[in-house]
Length: 76
Image (spheres, rainbow, N blue to C red):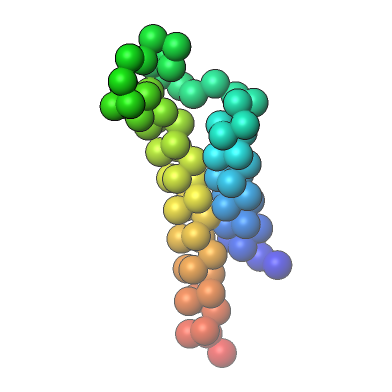
């Protein structure tokens, strides 16, 4: 396993772990306080930075895995 694949799998796993931790309330979201949210829109805005960080981490992991697979097919 190459370092690129290992980094890709690690990023995907970390993205899943971050989303699960947020969902179960293990970690608090970054940004605005959910306790002060008065509407569903305010809750979504408060959760956006944490969810976007996890989504970005997951996307970087997929990019690393896809690029490694694409590069491997072209080489002989």
